Length: 248
Length: 228
Ligand code: HEM
Ligand code: SF4
Ligand code: FES
Image 1 (cartoon, helix red, strand yellow):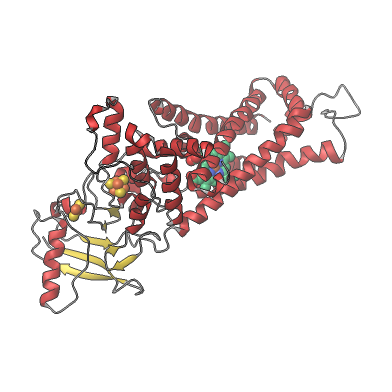
Image 2 (cartoon, chains in turn cyan, blue):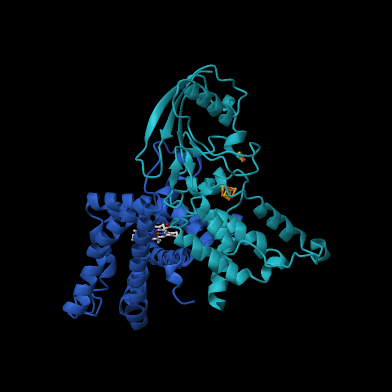
């Protein structure tokens, strides 16, 4: 396949940045999107040019590192996948592919296609955990019976890999799907209920301080999320938050 | 509870409550207007009651005005905040792949409704306030000196729909209202946290409302245009 890539290039956080055209030929349809970028980078290095920086780690859809806004959609046009799971056969020979970094004030660009997602870490530090003593006297989690539906819902919420596609896709750069998943994952389980009130208040406070936008319920996040995290988690977070505000 | 409007979810909740309040108001407004088609006499009597009963005039009307103003002011605040959250926009963004046009353009359908609300106040509210509080005529009669002249509301309504341009503007406004509500009504339920086993029913109900009520208003406007 021959393709015309339009890639966002930006030297560092303070550089203005611009889109640059890169024609690329002999791309195998079986390559993953990241492998295609590897091939491009090899060519750039051979020519003595600066390779394109992009995030990646596991390359099997579980770590959440790979990002990329491809042809106007987070992780490209396919559903329920990350960019490392996107294959070149999804595109047509001769197609132009626009590749941009996640765009959000809370996710500033570090270089080229790499953005700083530590805002998510700070939200997690604000409450995305349970305080249990794990030094030698941990209790078997299965000793507490849990309603099947709650267990399933908590498990689904826990599949969020923190990739940030929800923020990138949202017209408001809202992080509510991510935070909703993290809040729900604990709020549904007995171990998480103990700190539920403080958790939701603190995580939402941190989310707001990071400069993420508000939710308009467009549902773009749910469609683009590689893990299919449902909007129900945002509704649950809203309920948790409202009842926590009344208590706290 | 303090400072709930300072949080993103709190603002969203307040937005949804004001919106749900407007949904109830709209249904009430429609129920009275449709009487003008079904029975002009009943329409006159109900209008007179609404326009003169103190609970409605001095308690509910201020609440309504507050609700409308709160809703669009909060809409502007959210829009400004949301725009700030993304300072550099995408060179290519395929919003249509993951969300509806209505959901992405609430501010534009909202602004169209706001323009209509201004026209509507000029058409009905200002003349009403002038008659009642400046001219001091609380009788509701066509000719206040003649108690046999009958109530004025139906006649005033008919007069408004003589001009074709006004009917066209009303129709356009109601199309925008339908677009606003097609996303908004269901969205309000999600905002207050009601996404559960009733969601499917709520979705259907809000779709029927979002199309049915504006179409009903359009029908009333055209009916009077053709029958005056
Ligand atoms: C007066 C002009 C109006 C403006 C400027 C306006 C603006 C907006 C905006 C910007 C939103 C989206 C807020 C968000 O980001 O979630 C919204 C939501 C909504 N609006 Fe309006 N609107 C107006 C009038 C109305 C009217 C007359 C109704 C109903 C009779 C209405 C019903 C709704 C509903 C149901 C929502 C959804 C609330 C939610 O998502 O929680 N709006 N409006
Ligand atoms: S909710 Fe989905 S899109 Fe958002 S961070 Fe988690 S996995 Fe990624
Ligand atoms: S590289 Fe880990 S999810 Fe794509």
